[in-house]
Image 1 (spheres, rainbow, N blue to C red):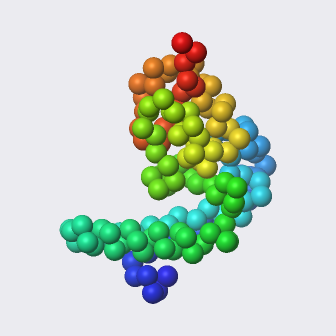
Image 2 (image 1 turned 90 degrees about the vertical axis):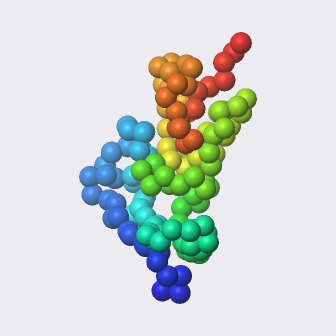
Amino acid sequence: MTELGKTGFVFNPYGGKMKEISSSETPFPHRSGNLYKIQYSVNWDEPGAELEKNYTTQIRSLFSYMTPFVSKNPRSAFLNYRDLDIGINSFGKDIYEEGKVYGVKYFGDNFDRLVKVKTAVDPENFFRNEQSIPTFPSKA
């Protein structure tokens, strides 16, 4: 980390009451079996595309370095630490498949249940962003 420069690395401990709640009781699945959540960050105030590329490369390097030490199949993620590098949705014909790429990382086995609710409540997918829960494809 010191070689990289401005990267940040925060461990949020898990356990206690969190592990007593089933991973299927709420959309947040990262409970029993998880020791902590890692927040990777990088901040800078100086403008410029070259600096942005440099700092983004630094944090991606740290993220990559950590691969052998973190969850796998899939590598999970916390929704409130949005990471567009793990996938985005273009809302085309493959809306569900594109959403599943990042959705399973954020929501684990809860993803399909959340898609079912989203499809029932917002079938036109009006409320969306590049990493929102997608809807199931229409049968039409």
